[in-house]
Each structure stands twice: as C-alpha cells, then as structure tokens.
Length: 105
Image 1 (cartoon, rainbow, N blue to C red):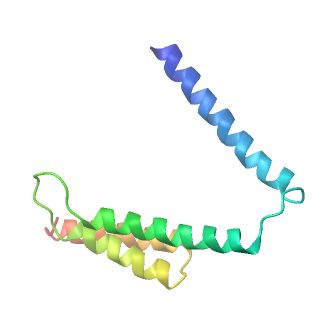
Image 2 (cartoon, helix red, strand yellow):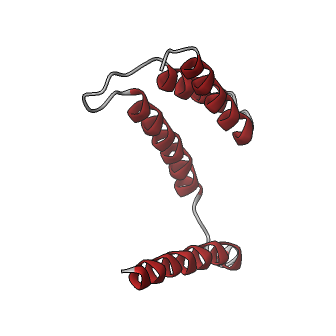
Image 3 (cartoon, rainbow, N blue to C red):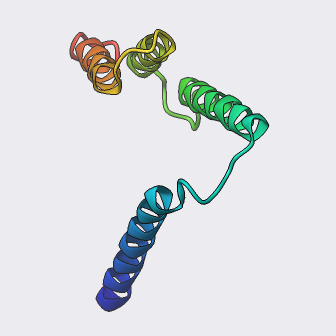
C-alpha cells in the first residue's frame, strides 16, 4: 500500500507540474475570447461564494459555535474588499482562534 500511495503522490505532483508548466508555454499560442475570459471571472466569483456559503452552513449533528462562521465572514468581507490573500487568511484564522479561545467555539 505504501508503494501505491507514493506512486499516486508522485503522479499528482507530476500532473500539477505539467499543468503549471503548460500555462506559460501556451500563453501566446492559445487565444481566449473576451467572452470566455469574462465567464471565467464570473465562475471564480461564484465558486468562492459557494465555498463561503457551504462553510457557513452547519452539517452533521455536532453543535455549531460562532467562531467558524465568524472567521469565514471576516474572510469573505476582506476578500470582497480585495485585500491581499495572506491578510485574509491570517484575519480569518485569528478571528476563529480568538473566538474559540474566548469559549465561543
């Protein structure tokens, strides 16, 4: 099983590298229409919104506290204001950690 796991991880790493390498190599060869670019921009916003909403909605039978939704909400507001991603992540994690420390898990 260990060999299969290592082989799978290697295959995923190789595939990721190939996709990242293909972008700059094909940049000048593939023309994307302005409509397709606009649709991809809209799709990214929809995808991020769906991620925020699914994180805010509780699942399972465990009690849901205030910390996680508050952290996601902070991240959503900062991302909407086009804040740098590292600051968004740090603020969301800090908010969640602080609220959990205060017992609002």
